[in-house]
Length: 168
Image 1 (cartoon, rainbow, N blue to C red):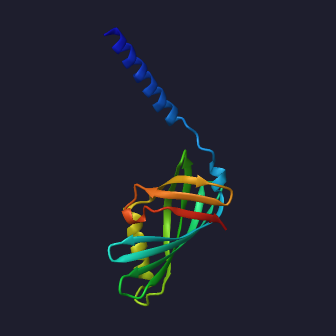
Image 2 (cartoon, rainbow, N blue to C red; image 1 turned 135 degrees about the vertical axis):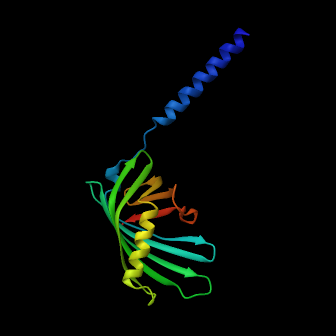
Image 3 (spheres, rainbow, N blue to C red; image 1 turned 90 degrees about the horizontal axis):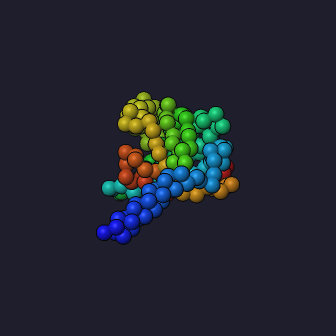
């Protein structure tokens, strides 16, 4: 009985140590590695009856602020694709291997769809902003000229695809 208790104690101690060691594991990059101008995509996302291909150009500043220009080509199956362009501004932070963006504003710029007026486009941008302002990405890889992330905890499962970004 005593031997079983000893083994149980050792196993418990090892498991606690492993959990503690995992929690304190540092990543081989810092927020400074993400500062600068980045072009991400084209990144295709597939939904029921449509494909969205996204290209983003993002400038991350050392002060934790960012601006992005998003170009989204939306192709509903059987219809001519349209392209919408928006800009977003906000703050960013790197917490371990999680990159977090908090969006402060979104501005609709244009659409190749002639029925999409500036007013309609801004209403849609505002509606998306009301759903969530915080976006989280798990950082998978960071190199001098390359960052690969994958979103999680978002509004759309279709958007949880790897994002490949190159320094612009």
